[in-house]
Image 1 (cartoon, rainbow, N blue to C red):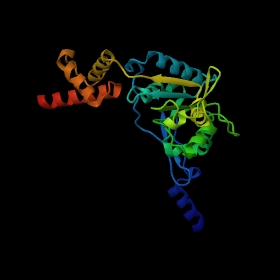
Image 2 (image 1 turned 90 degrees about the horizontal axis):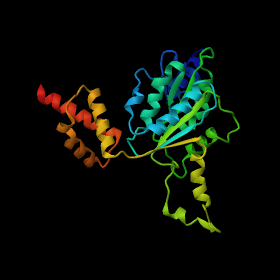
Image 3 (image 1 turned 135 degrees about the horizontal axis):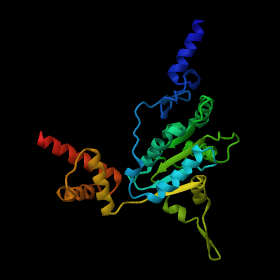
Image 4 (image 1 turned 180 degrees about the horizontal axis):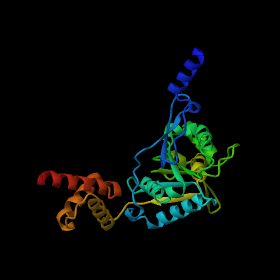
Length: 287
């Protein structure tokens, strides 16, 4: 008896997923996979950052495409894994969280996976299959800021999940990933030396083909691009209003532009950071 208790205690300490109950997905909208030495476990997220879809400006076509894909998914129809790639702070992860807000009542749930958890994908799928069969849940595995090195073992694990593994993936599981890189791996000048010409066609070499092969397994590619000045200022207005600031734009416009110039980016993230700076500094000065 004591030996069994010791084994159970060690399993709990090291993260054996079989020794931990699943989150109550009737009460939580999101969970994260905590990677531990023996696989890991799912932990419910009590407070989830859920932006409004209408607050995400400048990405209308991209929003419509991923929204349609997600509606298909929660309706029980075929849908695609999605790769959201592009500049930092342009709304990639915010869009996924906004979709959770919109479709949580229809059974959508998001499972956040960090890069260390990629190798645990078989355990994650097994855990999700054990979810309450009486409840119709649709799980999006969410990998934020995904990228791989040349010899990263997670690269092949993810390729197997997307397309090519022997074990079939459950129909109620999709993968949404964000990355600053379109093909998820660094590209080097040496890769160009492998390209060759066949008539009028340019044929990539084996290294380039390997780097493209993972991103091609995502059925949906969605690009996010830097905002122009007008869109950046519009996003500043949205974030200032959320903080209760109704100051005319003429009073903060120049400072907002300097803020973006100092950071070398006009993005939604930079606009939010400026709004917090402006609202906080003005509130402190007025106290």
